[in-house]
Length: 243
Image 1: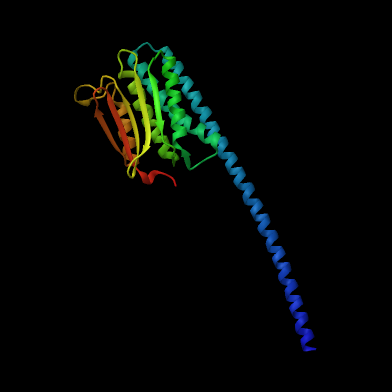
Image 2: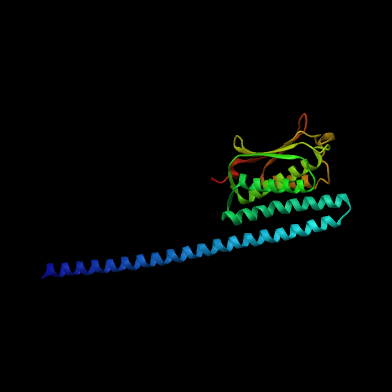
């Protein structure tokens, strides 16, 4: 009788454990499904947000271009063109995020390629005969760092297109590469250089923008007078790279 009772108790306990396991598995499955749906909704909302931001920035860029065409003062036109280039650099990032579905990190080389392509197309539309060459090492960076690199590249490339070759023909080269414990963005040309004592042409706003970004990234900025031309270099710690 004791053995019978003991065996029956074991069977009841086993059945209870099985029912508990089934209930637990069902709850885990339901919770996993809920989390998956929540993740999908979040990704969809984020993609929609990036799409809307990209469209909004495109509208702002169009308005700036319209205003630029209405101006006759060269300095005012140049200022708005520079502003529009900066807007495009940010817009390209949101477009990239929308098409790739990434959030915290991006392929910096792919993003910079799209930014540089936009600059080249814009300059060609304005009658520039300069060529833009690029050598971008594949690397993944935090989204904020990639945006900063895009803005710096925009400043330097635009400046080179405007001032490096007064004769109207030449080449601007952009490199993104991995150094010894660093990531380096390099823009160089074979033009007339930065002028007396390395002073940049224009309003100087672009230089202030670059220096501000370098401070935010804890990066170093170097300008080298070449023979001929100029090289601009941004060096940031490799810790900014995403594994």
